[in-house]
Length: 110
Image (tube, rainbow, N blue to C red; front, side):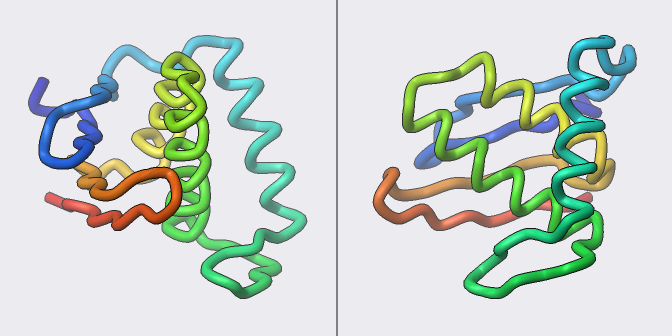
């Protein structure tokens, strides 16, 4: 539990993913595709980033976590949060406030 990544919505724990135990094969394939797509660049905070770094990729994917959560796709959002946990090992919590129309996100690093 100490190494888990937690996502809080409006102060309440909503998702939790463990970092230990590795990443299942299906998710490794998904993550490889995500990385390959992001290698082509991303739209992040209103800017086109042609070579996003790990932190920009993690924040970009967090945006998708919130989108799919708003759509009620909890399992897919958990999978994407595993991606974030695997790419940002020092991130221990994501604090989210608001709703699908406007999220405020704070990252809590160790």
